[in-house]
View 1 (cartoon, rainbow, N blue to C red):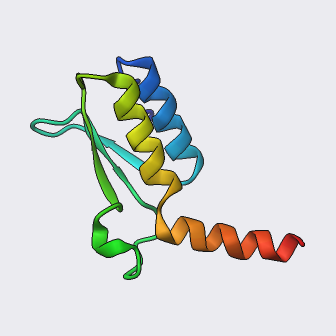
View 2 (tube, rainbow, N blue to C red):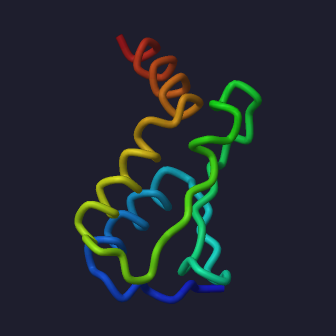
View 3 (spheres, helix red, strand yellow):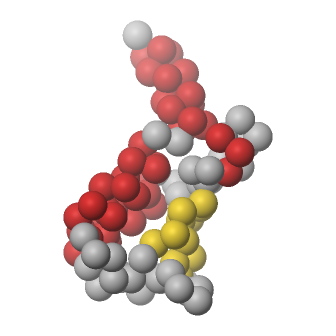
Length: 91
């Protein structure tokens, strides 16, 4: 099923970035537009702090919220560890 696009273009770009890294996006909820979930589900992944993040529908600053979403994806411990292992194999 295709998810609806986010009304703020900066946030939609950040969501596509997350999807490109394997993160799952679920639309809906009471206060948030949706949530983004880490694909790795590992114990070492910061106790879930960065594994699930809310996506706001009307943040005060869409650009800042989009940067925060990208930061969550890029700073995921499991993602970085897998990226480091892949990067070492190429050298």
